[in-house]
Length: 365
Image 1 (cartoon, one colour):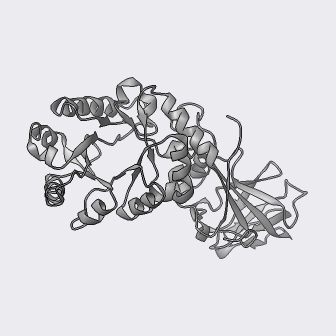
Image 2 (cartoon, rainbow, N blue to C red):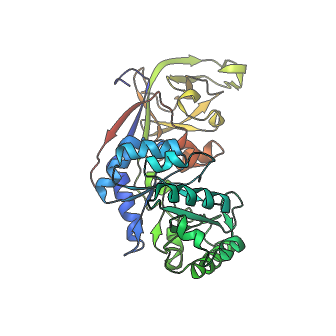
Image 3 (cartoon, rainbow, N blue to C red):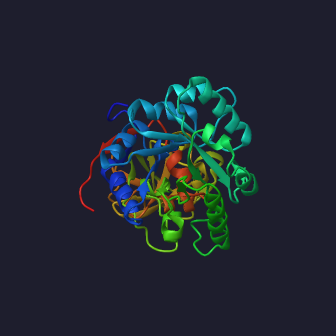
């Protein structure tokens, strides 16, 4: 989008993403660190983020869907790319054509992929997903153990064993220990296959969680992988919007749809040219805030499709054209998510396509 054609500006720091990848990898010296870039690199733009991570040294990437894998291959011609959501019926030839590796989660998927590899008379690597507690995708632990020594594993080109953590962001949750033990049993039953266990938060659960390949996603984009302590990641995303109009309201006046907010005293309001169609959650209505000249200004009434109203009474220098920050500085993605009754993941992945996107390569650690 052309600069100045939208009322809000989304700034994405590619250098911060690369630095976050290095910081995460430093938690496990000698262990390879991949990058999860699904959902358009968590809303930050796959086409710009993936090459930046490649330039930083990342060689293995994970996406969720085949379409994302095709987009990733277009900008990462030499990378190893895994498709997390597995092998949907009939999509094997397209995966193979783009040199993508499905994360297989059932015996049926294994058999279908093995048949495709044999027909191609060429290796077609894949990963095997073992479900250790999520109950979404993947073979159960007993099913994975029963495949020990089964030639189907080699026929399907399994090059990686992986699982998904249930509660890694809750370091003391007993499920983490149970998953570690189950995954260790599966790895012992399939000697020689590398394993991937740790997501962003899992990286901070200690050496027993690291295995052979780290698999961070959210933390790359500034989300806090250690919510029990300060965020070790650099901020990545900043969302600023210009004030489109200022108005003073008297006691008893309302603002926004359905008059959800009513002034009890004279207040000064500012309207921003952005709304839930841009990915800023409507659930933040009456709960979220923006920063204007460093002042915390409440969001009033219902957030509209294209507009947000702030109370800027305590920021008296606010004028038409003044910048309000909705993500950035003291408002990181986790804080914004909590204010909207959701999580930072949803804030990031919901970032709309209408914003003017500005990519920077910031400096400093």
